[in-house]
Structures are given as C-alpha cells and as structure tokens.
Length: 192
Image (cartoon, rainbow, N blue to C red):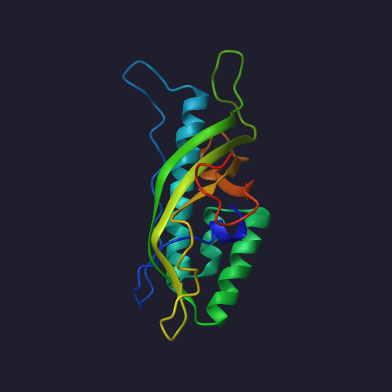
C-alpha cells in the first residue's frame, strides 16, 4: 500500500514481547471428490496472506520488542524496506501504534496461477492483485507523551491495492506483499 496506508495497523498496547503467530493457510481441497482450481487456491492463499500481513504489521508496530525482521514473513522488496525504515524511525522517536484495524473488504482483481494443460497447479511464480478497504477508525500512532501523530480528520476507511507474489507456487508459504498501486495515503475505498 502507499507508505502511509501500508503502515496502518493495530497495536496491542502490551508492554511485554508477545510472540507473533501467523494465520494458517486455507485448506486447498473443496467438497469431497472435488478439488479447488489453481485460481481458487491462489485467491484464498493471497487473501489469507493479506490478512496475515496486517496482523504481523500490527504486532511489530505496536510492540517495540517484536523484531522488525518478522515482517520478512509477509512482505518483500521495496514494500518491506519502506516498512522497516518507517517502523525503525518511529521506534527511535518512541512512537507506537495503538488500537485496531479491520479489513472490511478484500477482493482479488487479477490473478496468475501457473497450471498444466489438465488444470493442475504447477511450479512457477503466482501473483495476485487485490483491492482492500481497511477501517482505521480505531487505530492511532502515539508519541511517548500520549499525543497522536495522526490527523484527527483523516478518512476512516482507506483503500489499498496490494500485489502479492509467490515464487514457490503451488506451495502456499511463499506469498508476500510486494507492492501497492495506491500512490497516496488517505485514498478513500471508493476511489478507482
């Protein structure tokens, strides 16, 4: 997401280090006797990784004792570098995240999932472009004196258009957020 929107996450407010747990990947089979298509599998996996991204980001932003390198499990490339730099800067200022985020809508808008001529997943790089709407009305970043760093008039639901890639496809563990096509933080969810 844009640097501002991708940094939106929730903090637990706990002062002790809490281990980061990740969500489990979706089950990749359909009803008995029917398997999910590679497209269905990739959609579910990318959607789950996007949710996991926000959960991990929340832990890292909200607790300075959580290693910033934990983000390596959910992001890569420029997005990862920007997140780490932003979080390390805020930590150096004593700024932590408080509150909660809620992904109120997430959909895959474009998908690539390699498959053979019979429709079975095959190794290759999968990718998914998404459109997500994140409610940040209960989220804040605060200075050590308790004052907010955020504009109180900011929009309450913000658009993200992340791209996720999985170079380990069809292994579900390879998904990472790699970019966001929203160029400005504070973009409303109904923007195109």
